[in-house]
Image 1 (tube, rainbow, N blue to C red):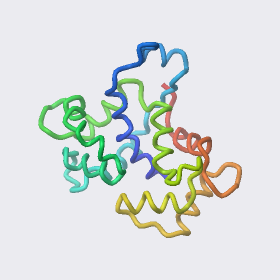
Image 2 (image 1 turned 180 degrees about the horizontal axis):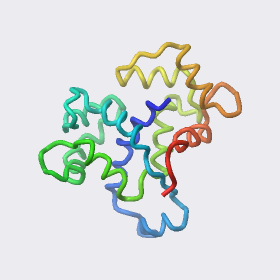
Image 3 (image 1 turned 90 degrees about the horizontal axis):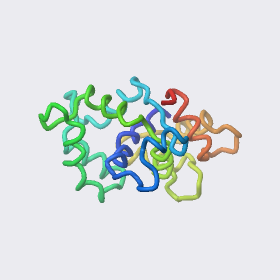
Image 4 (image 1 turned 90 degrees about the vertical axis):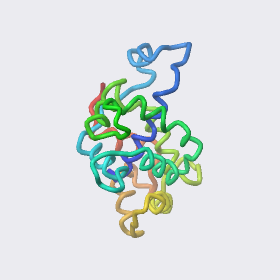
Length: 182
């Protein structure tokens, strides 16, 4: 189920938006309104490698746009140059793993809202639950094949109450298990 962490990079796009006027990002962090977690480096390497389609050790704008298309986020493609302005510290047109990790570590890590958005990507029929068919559908869009049995094993591994589906609380527990609170 660690493949779900692939979505974390995409959801950090939200960090580029201006903070709410009501609360600054510092106020949100210290108030607990938007808890954050430091991403696990090994999992982030898996995320990075999935985005880096040609396995050259760097993410191009095309790699990133392809990932957005696969996730059905075509409306965000126009933001890719801005993302690269922020993340590509070397200004070489690519994001290497070091830049990738620096970006995710600064700004407070992975936000609770980012994880909720990731859940909604997997909840294909928007019923508040992720079932085996939802997982298979998303993995297919990502170009990965997964048998029904493997998807059922993934659900069972995360399903806390044994009802056969992954609810938001199950998902949050799974996603934050290997992360450290900021």
